[in-house]
Length: 187
Image 1 (tube, rainbow, N blue to C red):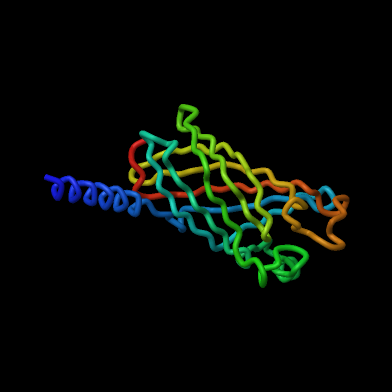
Image 2: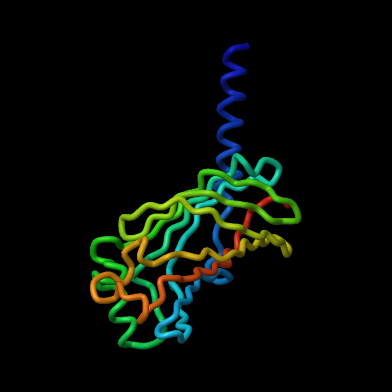
């Protein structure tokens, strides 16, 4: 009987991890964009490379886990000169900090496909607690998570040195994300 119970526990753990492993980011349908202002003029950019490891349970969202990473060297604002500056030490310091990460600590259902996600955002070695609203929608087998995270760039030492002057580049940056996921159960 003990062997049967142990086998059942192992099978449950294995099946649970398989179900979560099937949740995957669909990069071709996903985007991570950012917007800042330079001398009052909006500047837009995006990251070309990012990944998400998601274990989301719509029936128990509080047990869900999200790990999101962004390849900081993949940032582009569409201008050769600007793109050459972004990886440098004053901005993203890609040589020392190649990735930014987000790790969830709590997911709370708010109703109507809306969730509040708490976690730690780490950029350039600076870890900060953040809270962001996320909306989930489903179309066929794809679940899309969307939201906007307002940041203060100087909190993360983005635009260091001469770029600390917020009259040139505003401190406020909005990061918008659209993450398409496969393998998420019905919400």
